[in-house]
Length: 246
Ligand code: GEK
Image 1 (spheres, protein in one colour):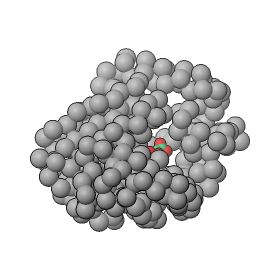
Image 2 (image 1 turned 30 degrees about the vertical axis):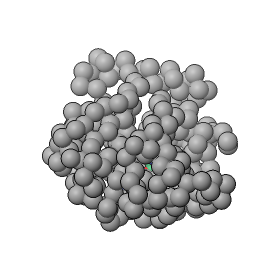
Image 3 (image 1 turned 180 degrees about the vertical axis):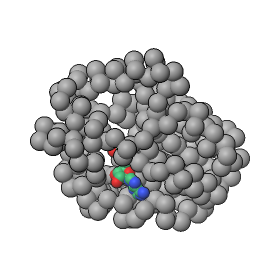
Image 4 (image 1 turned 45 degrees about the horizontal axis):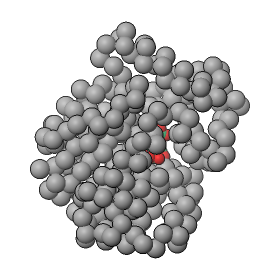
């Protein structure tokens, strides 16, 4: 795994983009930056085993290097579904294609294929879906785009289909928000990011990653039609939510 040293060089004045340098260090970046990331991938596998149905599609929107798609494929082993992995970053998709091809050649037990697509999640047609994953992707869209994507996901899900939505959030309580940010930064320092790297990345992500409150996510999911909604993971200011279409 190549070590993420991006913000040792970059000063954070340029907005964060998912370019080739980010794609090259991405697994290390997520592992050291997002508390609970590994748990989210593990749960995606377990949820796929329960929710993926034969003859349906699964979507991984903002798939990056395909970790969630591979977890879905492994979890859904024995089912024949099509997993559609979409990302609008050419650098991510180029690497994702190679990783997915390798996974499919090594694991021939699973009968589900992963189709890797360079494209915008907002333009992706969602149909006959038993499971949709938005693992830390919605936070990069504008508010209007978030509303319309969640509505389209609801419409494209089959009855009893599952949406998994993971996000960075802000706390309702400003004092707790300060504490949670501080705990997150401490987590990053423990994972060998320096104070300078943390602060530069924070600047680069300003207005690029815009977190909302858990209650905003719940309101949006309910407005789209979801009734059964639960936060299943929270680690500092990172949450993962599951919602089932009834
Ligand atoms: C994982 N889910 O490893 N359409 C498609 N992709 C997009 C869009 C869009 N409109 N906007 C952003 N992206 C992954 C991790 S990373 C999370 C997801 C992070 C893509 C973007 O190119 C990037 O690859 C991904 O969403 C977000 O489980 O870096 O914090």
